[in-house]
Image (cartoon, rainbow, N blue to C red; front, side):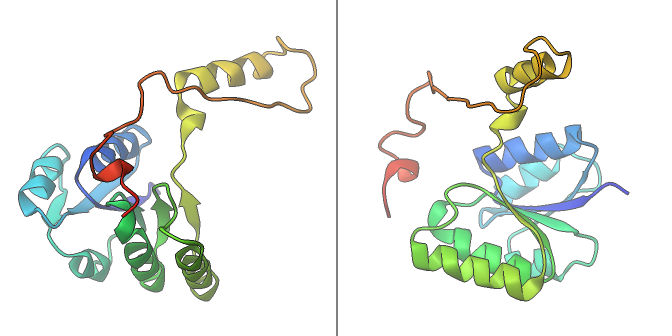
Length: 168
């Protein structure tokens, strides 16, 4: 059975995750954003997806298996812990949280809930990473037993000077 996904955050990265979930064969059941109009606009791109303005309402649904946390960094901890406490697996966008203490609180919630949490550094699906994987799979590099990769971002710093690049 395909995963039934709830996305918290209908901004740019929430839109990316909604598209990726659909490509992967998962169902985006609900999208939540404090700006309900944004949630409605994103929900309209998928069949049978509802828009909500409250994380509490999203987590109260019994048709959501996993939550994607795609909100501003300062809200990562609260949403991740609430989703884990509600018995959902979580895909948490990077950075994990705003401090080591917040990260430890999330780790504690994982241990208490016995649910899964994956960090959203998903470069493994980038075209360059997929090309490297194909080279290994067909044996073009011989018998591979170790690999080391580097990433260079040519598009600059995302959102330079806006919320994404300010510590708070």
